[in-house]
Length: 384
Image (cartoon, rainbow, N blue to C red):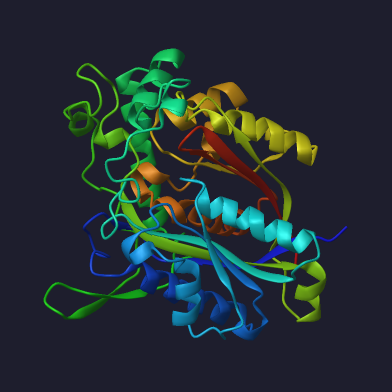
């Protein structure tokens, strides 16, 4: 059976909405990360057989197949195609799955997978505008905002606001520690950005982590979705801008090109879940992907579970009986940000570098998704 390996992974810094990346077009971001990826891998863009990028709001500067535009802007040959996909928050992870499947099938040997989103320049919901749900859907399911789903999860699992805020504070603490120790330095490409006055500067770090965050400040924030709720801006993921990409190959092709495979993809899955509760999909996806791999949660050395809202990883921890010290060891989307289409690829890029830093063997990634879905992936570090 063919084996799929990850040869390289890189990402931009993640900027806050209306922050340091506010003047950077998303297609420019995506093109920059594609250029950097092939440069780091030492491969010719001539050899790339497809570029698959996740992007949620596919309108305006993110419309008309941003993956193809970015490949052309990156000076890839015109014979290199590109396609853009939307599986909501898991779009970047699904791009990795589609690349994996194309290689496993024998159709392709070298594929780039990743994602991009500028929530500054193409706001959340821009692709839907003010349109209502079809009555055929809304009559069958209660279609609510994800924040209300997070409120229901907190109530169902009995999570207090204090617990949710403590989790959020820890996400910032871990992200700041990782930044200060240089853990992200290798995975982040320095990115030149234009400032409002027309001058340029180079950014090298994520903008999201807040050094002045305290439990007292978090407790003072007003609930965002219900008057007496527990979910607020401080225990929700940050709206952000960013891009990330990975180079996947068949192991035979990588070795034929003299490249060192860094990780192999062990198993992957995607599941549907309750579209109203919506954010609990990672629980079933994790169980399914572990079963497919013939492994247990105790075999995993680290796990990245997207912090859409703090109840999401907390209910996952409880149901999976996982080790909280292995979960999002360098912080998650609450601190680092959640550029929707890019997050799946950003998480994978960060997990790869964390496993290499610590010498871990297995990593598991899971993401909840709008509409009630979740992707899960297990990777294994390949020893030198």
